[in-house]
Image (cartoon, rainbow, N blue to C red):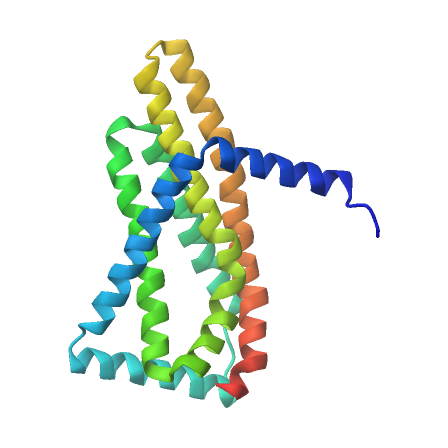
Length: 214
């Protein structure tokens, strides 16, 4: 067997150590995400019939358009995705820098879970488990491999900064922790931008290839 490249192994060790060191914080943000997902599923199950019909018509029209060779404005989609992803990254960074912003940071993560649960539940309710799962896997899976870990990591970084400030309120210590949080957030924001690129040039191409089976 070929030896695993040292860089990749070192990266895995760094990520693993980071998660283990902040396991309690990651448990909290993951729970918030799952609570949001569950609320999204419950919300869809309680939609009025008129709203369900509107969503079904929109989804059916979208799928039919792709099957008939309809084009996707990838540049426009990329710009929108970058604006949304970078925007949420900056928002989570800012909330993490403020003591009073931590509860809002929790709400943002839970809301992203809500959106995820709402979307998945809606698609499966309309298309069924088989076709719905295929649509979700082709259109949402790739970018969320980057997106979800990034927003969770940003949440954890904000929690760490908040707890550090509460433990040690010396100005020099606070400045150092804010710099660390900012540098870490910049890396996560770059990965969120990468998520947008994957969404537009990976997921859309995969969706266009598999749309005939939906």
